[in-house]
Length: 315
Image (cartoon, rainbow, N blue to C red; front, side, top):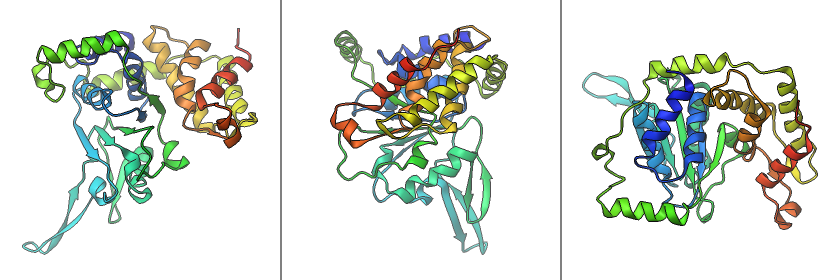
């Protein structure tokens, strides 16, 4: 099974439980195949948790969910050393981060110290407990959610934490017809908390993922595309409306995810449209808008589109 066939099957299976949100689920699949993490931003009740649980079932992954709260400690996530009085020894109690897919629900509800507990895991795929380094199993992916409306009692993620996310995905309300379909399914007995009652067929295994990632690594990228990506990132740095533009890590995120998109479309080479598709979710959390630009009603996506319109597309 190649990347195109696998993602089409996953999309088809996900449609059994998720109405709409195809763009959101596609971005989650892209990040998974690119070995990245996703920050999901949307109001409560728009199927963020359901999408995460569905993705985990489709790839036969271990799934854990942590509700982030102001009193959550780093040890509640990564684990700690516990003394056993009977044996007279310490043993390690592993935290929920030892999983394949971790849902960090409302990540901005926890203070910076707890948020930072994810940095090592997301960046190096390992954790350190009392000086002992412990590798995380593959695949490993963090899906974090945050509410874009209610900021009371929250701790905004610092730039270093945001930069660890490959994508920032915006989860919007469904259309009217999609919401009617949601109601129709719930009225017929569908329970989003009981996915075992739905005939969801697993599509991939961890071994399959490794094979698909090897296929993606072989996707060709012309020199002109590399130049195009670099110029896009440079354009964000030179924007008069941005305090902070994209870093080289932003360029790398666009490159790696554009290769995934190309493979998903059945191609073994990247075209400019692949870059344009992944640019908004790859850049939007890595740029900082000037206050005066925000007052004018500009947002990150508008400025990213402006950069895309200014930079010459390679022929």
